[in-house]
Length: 264
Ligand code: PEP
Ligand code: MN
Image 1: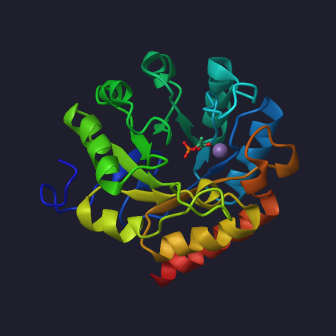
Image 2 (image 1 turned 45 degrees about the vertical axis):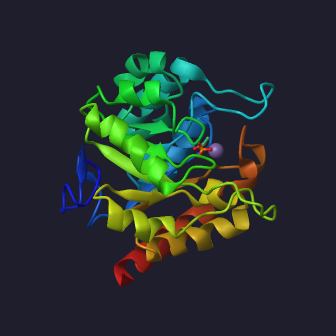
Image 3 (image 1 turned 135 degrees about the horizontal axis):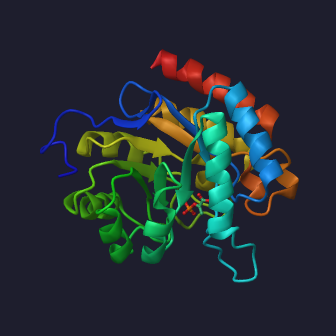
């Protein structure tokens, strides 16, 4: 069902209020790794509005490698996030970690994110097949593209056709970067599937200085959009500060992404 053989025309998702994801639209989504406070959200949303970016990312349930790291504000944080986003005309993408959260989160999100550690959580994918909101599936940490497409097939065959795929880097033998952003994935996925393909350069390389370069490369490779981490003070971010852009860097990147997209 997710194959180009089954549907030739590229899928374009309509989030409402003129926000569309897929062929013909450059989708930009930015925000902190974790939602931390009302004040942080307010500043971030102002930054997005100022730059005409319509989607904010930010985790309220955080899958952390260590149980002692900040694990997110949970539902309370999501409700604040939602309320503030409504006020600013911003759409929300945030990670759902388990089946029980799908229903709880449903009314407060615009796009459900399935994280790299959950790409093959088939119960979660089944549950998301039953919702009427878009789902962005991140590639598994050591997942092949076939596996990513199979994960999308779970949700699609369950009845939810509103899907986005995200290349966020894979684990390789290389240790100079956090992950290896596999830009090969972009043209390959675009050929194999009609679904929109988004690149996450923040997790893909993990080093702030190189995030803009890889974001631009992602768009040149044919991505339908970029999702990246930004924060008013990356050094103070509760998670992933080392790969997070400040507002100045973010603004510059947005400008350049639009230029590069126009060249394509
Ligand atoms: C995130 O988006 O902050 C995140 C945890 O991403 P991933 O699942 O790709 O590691
Ligand atoms: Mn992160």
